[in-house]
Image: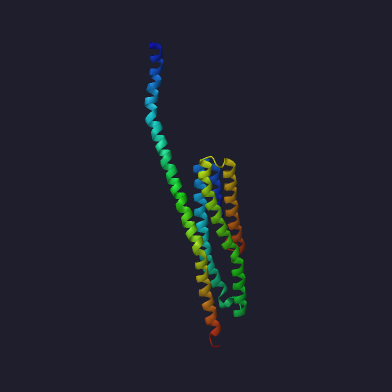
Length: 134
Length: 77
């Protein structure tokens, strides 16, 4: 996952111009999509783990699952924010193309994409989907 | 007049040779841009569907776990 995000950043750095920006948007969307599916799978498996009798009493397990679900909200919000940033970025390209917006707006848009991807990565790490937090 | 023709002739010849290459390059670039544009639309549409479907998928996971725990709670000791 971190590798894929790094790949997006590398492609962005190497591909100048509007086609490069479009490619960056597409790659970011693909990486975030794969992350969302990974999260969905993790969610089912992790809740199943938390629900197992060896994790404590029924009360303990219910508390642990509730706590996990509360923490999970930040990931859902991050994925939604990522979608807004991607859609906004995509809408900006034709405006740069026709001169309504300039290259600085494009750079700001790319920075927003990195920020959104990083935010999702942080949220997934905090939840334990990424890293050794499981 | 002949001098001008002598100067223009190799230039026109060069343009004639390069024009098909230039047109080919422009066409190739245009196709690449169209491909990239289509891939952006596809990628965003796919991600949109995934994000919109996420709450439902999560709710299904929750329901499965809740049912499992409820069954355990109602099981006679």
